[in-house]
Length: 120
Image (cartoon, rainbow, N blue to C red; front, side, top):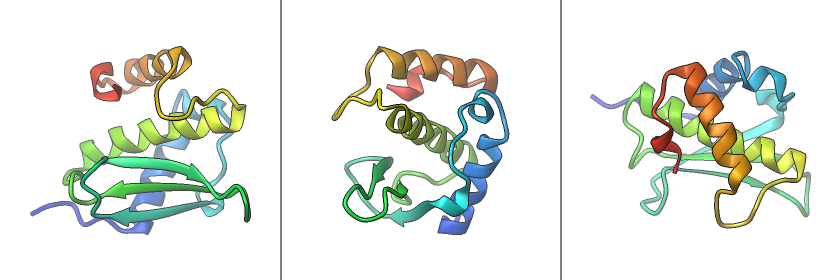
């Protein structure tokens, strides 16, 4: 059996991570201020975006095609939360990961016991 993904499950994963280091120091928006969506995209595991022209609300999308377990969900959610933090801090780079992203990913992985190669 695979983990059934719903927007509610994504929000719960987000709030769990938001309550832990280093995320709790980043002042990320509460889950109520973020839109969560499940997709079956086959070109990426997850995505973070912002509705710039409407509300500036953040949206995190996770692919149920790739994400089948809780550990996979947590790693991908953390990855997208790093993108969210960079968007808020205005240090994001379109279409890729910059030095700051890799530095933040290493910090996240050290705290949560993940391999930083998962964040490439």
